[in-house]
Image (cartoon, rainbow, N blue to C red; front, top):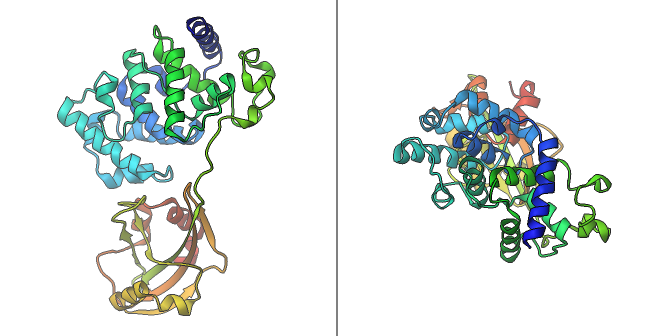
Length: 354
């Protein structure tokens, strides 16, 4: 295996040095910037994540700046990336690094992984890139590259599969330059050994790639079938006061915890205005704000797709005779951190509600 590892590493790193993209976090070994980039780029393409990374660095140039930030400001900056728990963990970990480590990130995998929101992949990336620790990274790109080249059909979304690929990546790792090797392996998967239509004829591994030789590139990596996607039905009430302000409520739990949204009535299917008005949660809002009117803004239903659920959404206009401190002007509403579903609606349909 040693000979295979050396040959693999040599080919991979040579390819990387000749083909790597110029990215801002590759110009530094400062753990703060590596950590920030890795958290942002989890399940996000570089072209999508780059603007977020640049905005975060401008707003919070050091971990000390981020540690002082307000949660609502961080969530607003994160808006659109999804997985908002990562943004909350980002802020929590920044505070821990400043308060318990004097602003200096731990320099070893075993300590990094103890920080909230830093799992095996992120800890391995920081430890290898910043501190030259010989720990292998395994992400979606790595799964794809290794499964194809070595013909591994163990499902990657199983505990056994994750251990198998971590073990193989560790065996292949160039311990003399682990950071470069890890970045090379991830980069190769991201820009060359792509999910669809990779240029296998030009691949440096084509003579040893099992998937290429057996014409099964599209088969890898193997995954167990995911659970069926859950369908949910959201009815957002745009409760507008006589003064032209809007009611917004802050989520207390779930994937959108701490984000702001319109009053929500969730049903088990699409409902008419009459049936919506009979829902207990609607009756609660009606009593609280002395609601006078209710009408559907659009006949079509907006479907917001998340990895584990599809949210079928309707927006209803509601006039209120009473308001509270949770009512905001339209400009104040725009400034609140909110789910992308709400943000897109506001961007596209401001004239409908103002």
